[in-house]
Image 1 (cartoon, rainbow, N blue to C red):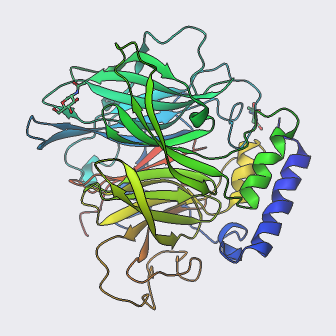
Image 2 (image 1 turned 90 degrees about the vertical axis):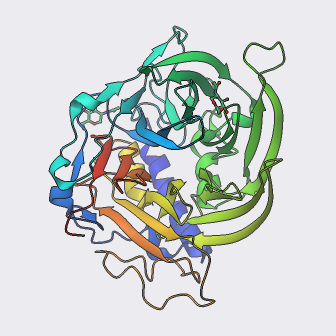
Length: 440
Ligand SMILES: *[C@@H]1O[C@H](CO)[C@@H](O)[C@H](O)[C@H]1NC(C)=O
Ligand SMILES: *[C@@H]1O[C@H](CO)[C@@H](O)[C@H](O)[C@H]1NC(C)=O
C-alpha cells in the first residue's frame, strides 16, 4: 500500500521540481484544467466515441499496437489491434506503486476493427474482440504486461510478439509468436531477462528479432526500504539517470545466449517512456515523461545507432506512449495532464484522472518561427502550456476530465479509417474508439 506519507512526498517533491525547473511549466502538471467530460477533434465525443466492453479483465490497458497484415511484397492487406491490459494494476504497479499482490495475471486482447469507420459503426462490435490465449506460458509465472509490439505478418507468416512484463522479482520481456491463421493464440517462446531491462517500459521493433527498449527509471520500487522514495526522487527531480537500449536476439533454437547484442542507444535520459521509429526508419522519437517533452533522434538504420538528438518538443502534460502515424507526418502523444490525480488513482484514493492526446506536426518545417496561435479548437488549448517549437504545431485530438475516459496512455490512429484508439492506464473500460464524424 502506498502510504499517505509517500503520497505527500510525491506532491511535495513535484512542487519542488516545478519550482526548480522552468521546463515543465507550472500549469502543466499541477493545475486542474477545466476539461470537459470528453472532446474529440474529428467529431462529437458523445456520439462518435465509444468504449469496448470486454468484461472485468479488459481494463487498465497501458498500451496498444497495430498488427499489420501485408502481402509478400509488403503491401497492406489488413490491420488488427492488440491491447495490453492489467486489471490488477491497482495492486501491482512497479512504476507508481503499490506492490501489494502480483498474483492475478494481466491480459492481451485482439480486436478486429470494422472496416468502414463510419458513424453508423460507432458502437464497437464485441464479437470482434477476443482475449489472447497465452499458450505454453509457464505456470506460476507472473504476467503484468506493459509495452507491447508485434512484427507485421507477411503473406500470412507468423509474427513475433514482445511484451514487457513487470513480474514480481524483476521486469522481463516475454516473446510470443502469433499466426494470422489463429490470431487469438499467443504461443509462448521464451522469457528475456537482462540487467538492461530492469525497469523496461516500452518497445519499438527494428526486425522480427531486435528492438529498442526504454527503461523508465534507474531506481525501482522493488529496492528494499528506499523503494518508495528513490524512484520518486528520480522522477520529480527529473534526474537524467535512465537509458534506452537496442537489443538483438539469437534465434530461439540456437545455443547462444538469448541476447546476442546489447547497445546503449541513449544514456542519461530522465524517465524515458514511450518510443517509436519513424516509418522511413531515419528517426526515433522518445518521450521523457518527467521533462514533459518528446525527443527526436536521428537513426542509422543499418546499425540501429542513434546518431544525434536533433529536436526537443514540449507537450502540455507528462507524456506516456507515443507513435508516429503511418506516413511519419505526425506523432501521436498520449499522457497525463494532472500528475497528482494520476498518483492518487494509482493509490486507489480517487477513481479517475484526466486524459490528453495530441498530434505533433512532423512534416518538414516551413517556418523558422513558432505559430502565434495554435490548438484553438480544443477546450483546453496546448497553447500557453507547452513552449511552442517552430514547425512543430501541437494539436489536441482528445481530452477528458477523466469521467469520459481516464488516464490516457496510448493514442493510435488508423491510417485508412482515421479511427482514433486511446488506451487508459487506469481506465475501467481499457480503450476508447473514436470514429471521425461524417460531417468532417
Ligand atoms: C480500491 O478501492 C475500492 C473502493 O474504494 C475497493 O473496492 C478496492 O478493493 C480497492 N482496490 C485495491 C486494489 O485496493
Ligand atoms: C515473415 O516474413 C518477413 C518478410 O519476408 C520476414 O522478415 C520475417 O522474418 C518472417 N517471419 C517469420 C517468423 O518467419
